Image (cartoon, rainbow, N blue to C red; front, side):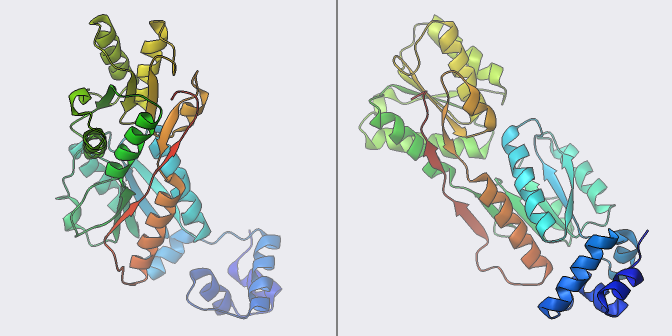
Amino acid sequence: MATLKDVAEMAGVSVSTVSYVLSGKKTVRPETLQRIEDAIEKLDYCPNLLASSLKTNQSKTIGVVVSDLQNLFFVDLLASIEDELGQQGYCMTVCNSDNSSSREKKCLRRLMSRNIDGLILIGTGVNDFTNFRKIKLPLVCIDRVSDQEFFTVRTDNFQGGMMGTKHLLSKGYKKILFLGNQEYEFSIERCRGYETAMKEAGLEEYISCRNIDTLKVEGAYQEVEKMLQEKLEFDAVFGSFDYFAIGALNALIRHGIRVPEQVGVLGFDDIAPARFTVPVLSSVAQPKKELGTTAVQCLLKMLHKETLEERQLLLMPEVVERESC
């Protein structure tokens, strides 16, 4: 197995120069950097990160706590985070809190035992930051409402709710049913956007927000089926996230209702399965790549003791129009 000394000899530089380049502590001339990179590639050199971390007290590892690994939106976020971390010479280790405050506390304990350099929190229905105020690591939240104490990057859910509703209104739908979950801040904000757009359009009488006490597809399916059986009127369904929209879409089709001719359906998040429904689901797309990349870049700035001018970053979603409305 190649050593640091082997790389230095092949590149024609000192061992300390290679070490500084790998740690990012020193810049060298482009031609020197190229020789070092070529030597690393030819020798297939793999640095001993454990030994390095003992010397520098930096593991080059970022801990990530995600609230629900079954949610494909979060899986997409993790992919964008890993891509950006990899480009910056870091790796990540992931824990799933399953939307549980107690499990989140256990995740934090496990990650801290691994000498992580920083922490990213992705989404949760429990906005309790008590556990995290005790740690002294750089921390960034994604899709999670926090106070000014922690840096947060998330989608403007209120504007997304307005955008989606206005899109449905522009297609001629008026009796729009909103499916949400009032335990989760993202859903509450999207519902507020929906209600605001409906009021601005003078359609207050048609406002209908249904609370579903789960985040599963089945919950939306059962709610819409119940409404159809009760002959309640609506001409569009806006799911506070794609899983609810997919559940509604299935219930409508099973009852012989034509989508989008009779009822339009719109989701939120734009996860991969949304592109494979029949008809193909329209959705308010979150900027997943930008969310992950921005979070990592901000976390690394904190690690390098740089000052962040803004503590709360809101990114704008966009409506992706397909076949369902």
